[in-house]
Image 1 (cartoon, rainbow, N blue to C red):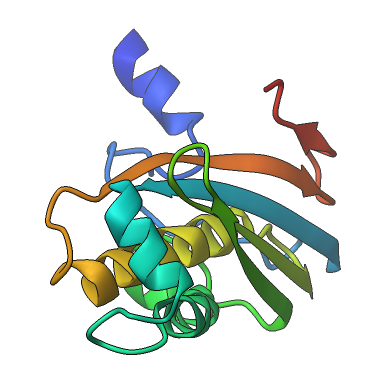
Image 2: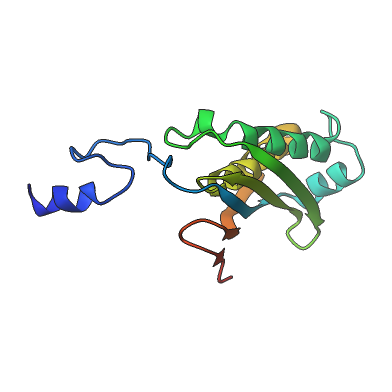
Length: 166
């Protein structure tokens, strides 16, 4: 076995032949786990003002984006090939106006009691909420930017707590 394969086999998502595999988490204890992710959506001031005043052509942009984020978190295992389907106990998506961008700050918090974490579910929630915000407002502006999708924090599991340095 070459050194390259030796290194690959120590990676949890690769088997001894270097092929992608779903990690077996059946021997891990179910513990409470939470992850918080964020994204921002930047747009022209006129677009921001139209959304804030409820004048977007497709209706309630923020309520639709929030609901899409919640629904997306529940579908993460169907979207990301090696993610485990998890029982989600809570998904919260908050979308706050940010006149300095101008645009919106999106934050999602996902909680479970399971054998593996919910980082991907939180990241999926903010990503799809941002994409939905774009879809709902694209008639007003095509140059809307989705930026800075990132994990802010996570708790639980073998690797313990993580807090974003920024």
